[in-house]
Image (cartoon, rainbow, N blue to C red; front, side):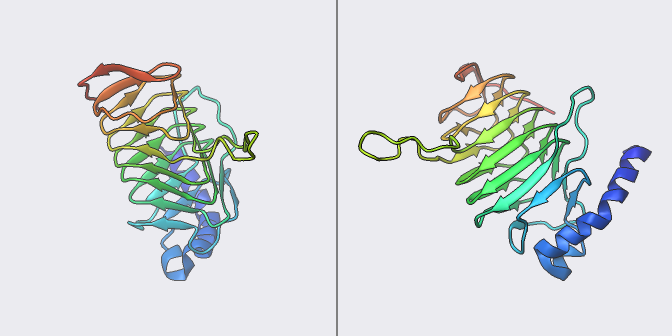
Length: 221
């Protein structure tokens, strides 16, 4: 960590402390388990809206860092309608991160890391396993945003859970939509569109829509 990064963390402490006290109470909040960059907008956070399984100081960092040369957008953390964000271990979210929960639960496993401008839009459930890595401009959604009704008046595009296994690398500019499942050990190629449930571990997945390109792979960060 260079001097500028250290200064950025230090400047973020006072505001983050106030947010953490609101979310975790005094005993939990004073440790500042979640560090928010000062550019991160927060909305709807209240007692219990964020849960941290291992509440180490600055264990979860939101709005910090990312690849050089990638322009950032404005970061946002919004938890409304009884939504809950769960962090099971240390996690790092780059500049431009958007976490929006309109109900439901968003779960991040241990060792999670995402690059700039990643978005998580959840109204039901999105869950990540341990050791997941995201490139820049990756988006997750478990709904279409608007309801579509058939001639019988029934909703035809209900939300559906999104699941990502352990040790998964999702490269830059990928969209992951409702009902998707990326199994353990998989890699999702850049610019892919993931719309369905995959069941083969250690696979290279890619394309629009995504399909299995290669089997029996492994990857290392």
